[in-house]
Length: 218
Image (cartoon, rainbow, N blue to C red):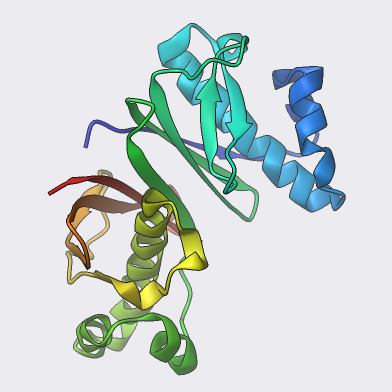
């Protein structure tokens, strides 16, 4: 999918603030809860490190917040950089993903592998997804449900709606579940004229699923 990604794990005592300018740090002032602010900082650091590899170093990158909250990349003068960005956070981890073209519709998600209750599946998964999960061995279902949910969230981010759209408007899978050190493609179906390219993999350690999605006109 011509995407680049970086997964960053928080470390106790790490001075995340040193990566950001005073103006950037001021943008995070809306986060009063220390844990939320730390999560925000970690995502900004991941984005600046990853995008800086293509754009001349972290100092050449500013991460801005769009009207709907989606992040985008600017240079120090506020002009858009030629990369699209998506961020995801979970339990002391931050995932940054970039793709060529500032207008590229890109989404990323990061989810812990854990069982999903019947009510959650009924509310947020399509009938096709539930049939896929029901046909799996019980030991496979937590991973499959996590893959479906993470990819679904990544696609909704790429669409620019996040969870503002019904999660069952996106149908994911079936797909291969054998863990791999590479991203594996996932079929996605949704209404409209968009073609979706999506993939998943396990994070090192196997506790989290990473999902990426890019949309292009069909």
